[in-house]
Length: 388
Image 1 (cartoon, rainbow, N blue to C red):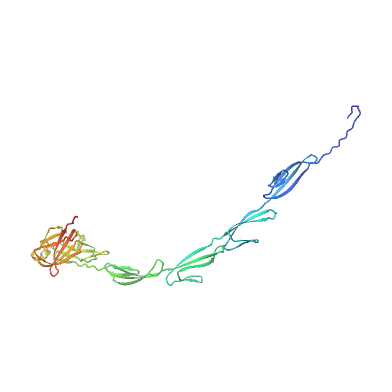
Image 2 (cartoon, rainbow, N blue to C red):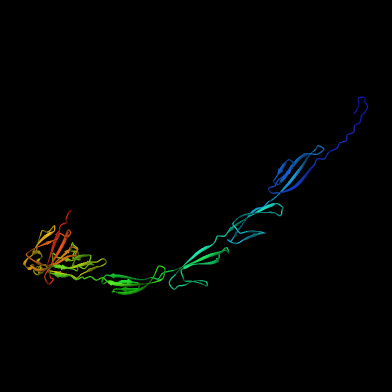
């Protein structure tokens, strides 16, 4: 370079290069903590650059390599038997609940463990035992024979104490006496026995609980008189109190020929007739009786010669009888069902008056018997129903 005076000038340049820094800082924190680098805070692992000026004014870069160590958080479920104790170091736990414990892990970070204490359920059960008289229930070396509740301590599947209650119930042994009647000519099964005669019988049965029970049966045979008295054309059956209904039947056709349930029957044609007697539980049939109307009319039937006036009646009646029925006789007044309502000893005249005002409305049968008790006539009388 030349000066203005054309004299050469020489300059020397001394150049100095300042260094630019690039370095790395390695840091470690625990999970949940933060690391301050420059103007920023970091809580996650990573590689972070930071630009800055040196004292010489040059740009430099500093790097942060941040490592985050884990902090442990865990729950330990610990079931124990009621009354037992769980030990953790110097700590003891026996009640149900959540118990947090803080400690330093191997990496130096704070960690927590929650101990959750739960109790196994208390096992209790009942075992019912039904015993008959004289029986004994055995469980191992134990014997039970009296009614009661007996607790037994056992170990369950969790090795905890449990209780089994043995409930012993003694079932009663029954001894009963019963009375029963059967129809004549029939049989009754009583346990293993088949009975057809009256008497006293004993049988052993099993109750619902499986115990022996003794039943004594007094067996009665129902007695029903099936005889039929025949006086001329009149057939008369028994009027026993246990008979509930009468059916007169034709022995040939087995058809019912009477419209009324009555112990008395006047056939309207020749034939053979019998009566069915109904009790509360049984049906009996009498033997068959032959009726010849022509012969019977000659032997008996003063019934058609008796005049009743008025018939139907409201209460009082006049009864005119033929000469053959005059004198001392027995009069039996029956309802249509065969129930004897009144019996009287009367000396019959050609005309006789009777008062039926005490009888309710309906059909009534008058039996006229002689001094020896022989039926001489049967008269049907209708009593009118009174309106009030």
